[in-house]
Length: 332
Image (cartoon, one colour):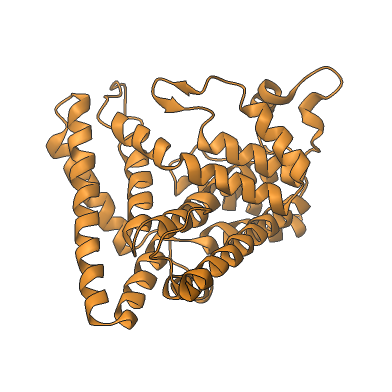
């Protein structure tokens, strides 16, 4: 988000504001025609091009992502040649279907309300439904309020990055709708083509390129998201936790380490002053004599509101910065 491009004009900033307002009024459901179409095309490409070799996944990724970017770029260029109003509409439509702040905040709010009412069953159910939408293991029926809060934060904070800050970064970096489509489609294919096979079938390597490609596409946006959390939260705590998880090698098997999820959760946990990682993962990174858990407090129900506030403050920070960049481009 520190990177500026000539295309970041007041029109782009207005598109971001309109999209965020539209999404607050009418949030995009998790299951919608655009996502359904993406799933259908991704599955058809997988079934038609997966012949058991890794390079076939590379060809499929380049075909889908390159084709989508070519179509979006042509549509945006055509709209821009007619009117900046039409280009604005194209940007808003693409951002509306690629961003999703309410998908993050609404779920956390519902869990917070259930916990405030003392309804642990409802909170567990809400968390389980949320995770099920992303093919993640459901929450245990026996977890207490603190663990519900921790799992909700662990699940929701990376989603806030993928649905808001990552899209925002690539919208700034590439012209018009190209950046958001690249980021969200790459993220979707990385998940879709690396799902665990049903039954006892061994996993193939078709999705390996998609997984690696998104890891590198997301490398810088994830670290800028973590930096934003640090700036608007407990800066020293966030940087300390970030440094603790950054001790592994710089790259493992072609993948950047630590991965984006780890960086974001570490910075967010430090910024909030609360444990976000599970017990085993927290012990791996933070436990040392006299400072078990990195000095972070155990999760409590109030942490959910704090997490939502952290994301809101980070979003306002980047929006203010982008407004200054837009004004500088306009005045130049």
